Structure formats: C-alpha cells, structure tokens
Length: 54
Image 1 (cartoon, one colour):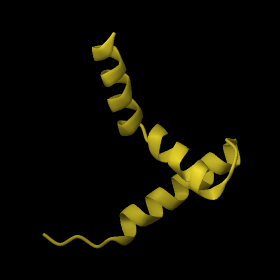
Image 2 (spheres, helix red, strand yellow):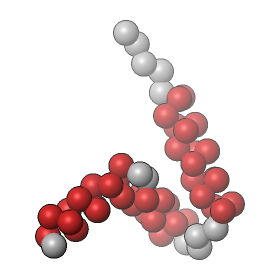
Image 3 (cartoon, one colour):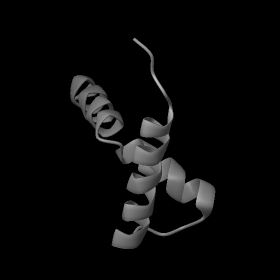
Image 4 (tube, helix red, strand yellow):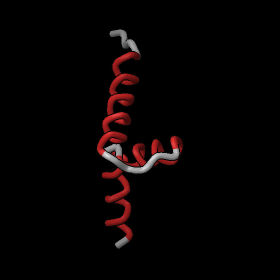
C-alpha cells in the first residue's frame, strides 16, 4: 500500500495535478474547466518564455 501511495504521488506530480492544486489554493479558486485552462496557459507561457541556450 505504501508503494502504491508513493507511485500515485509521483504520477500526480508528473501530471501537474499537485501544481494545479497549489494554484487553486494560492488563488483561492475552485476547480473548473476555465480555471484549468488558465493554469495550463500560464504554465506553458512560463515554460516557453524562459530562453534556453545550447
């Protein structure tokens, strides 16, 4: 059971579920399709704004 909980926690982190929960808590928002879209767009914007060099 402990291994299963650890595996599920890892999958939630990889799948951005934990980050989304932190986003909701930080903004005091409730889960909705619109809020998920806002979260996803912000994550992508931050990811691609950071320039990477060779």
